[in-house]
Image (cartoon, rainbow, N blue to C red):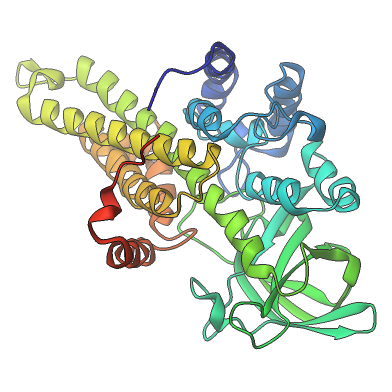
Length: 400
C-alpha cells in the first residue's frame, strides 16, 4: 500500500484540525455548551454547523451531486480522525452516527425520488435520522434471523407490528429506516422501509437511560402497532433487507473506528500534557519509566488501529467488501478507545476522574464501543469463520 494522501485530503484535514482547535475545543470547557444529556446543546450546535457549512467542511462523505465532497473511505479515515479530536466534532460536520451511515446507504441504494425525499433533508441538516433494527429479547440483535417485527402486505401498503430498542437518535429523528420481517425465508425474508416521525401507528415507549453520555436523540425503545408504510417507501426491494443492512453496517463500523481513533489520540494528548508538567517526589511524571511505558504502548496501539482502519478503507475503495478487515479494525479500535481513556485517567489521577477534562466523558462513552454494530465476540466468530474457510489464505497478500 501507498500510505501517502492526496494534497486535497491533506488540505481538508488541516482545515478540519484548525476548525476543531479554534471552535470546538473551547466549547468543551464551557458547561453552558452541554445539553441535559451531556452532548452539545442545540444553540451552539446550530452555530457550529453553520460555520462548518460556510467553510465547506460539511458532509464530506457524500458525492458532490448529493451535497458532499466525494471523499472515498481512505479520505474519510483521515478526516474523521481529525474531526473527533473533539467530543463535539463529528456532529458539527454532519458526519456523526447514525446520520452518517443512513446518508451513505440512502445514497447507495435509494431511488432518485427517495433520495430527494429522505436523503436531501438530512444532508441539508434540516432533520435527523435513525436506523431501527435491534429488538428486545427474544427478538433480533446481532442475529437478524431472530427478528420478530413484521411488515404484512396490505394492498399498496405494508402494516408493521412489533418492537425495537436501543435505536440511536430516535428521540430527535424525523426520518427512519426500519428493518422488518416480510417472509420466513432466512435470506430473503427481511425488508427495509422508510417512514416519517409523524406517521401514525408507532410510538417511542421510552428513552432508555444509559451509562452515557448520549448521542443526540438518545437510545430509544419503539413500539409499532399498525404503522402503515406505502410500498414506494421500500428501500431497494422487498426481501433485500439483509443487503441493505450489510450496505449500511459495514462502512458504519469502519467510520466508528475512524472517529474513535481521534478520541484515543485526544486521550494520549491529555495524558502527555499533564505528565509533562505534573511533579511528584521530585520528578516529573513524564520522566517515570512506568508512565513512558504506558504512553509508548498506547502510541503503538493507536498506530496499529490506524493501519487496520486504513487497510479496510483501501479495500472498500477498490471495490472489495473488507468484511474481515472491518471486523479486525472494529475489535481492536473499540478496545483501544477504552484503554486509552483508562490510561489517561490513571496518569491524570483525580483530575482525570473529575469533569475538569473530557476524559471521564470519553471513558463512559468508550464502553459502548465494544457493543455497538456487533459485539467483540460476534466479530471474532466471524473472523474464525473466514479462517476456517480460507485457512492459510486468511493472511494471503493479493497480487497485482
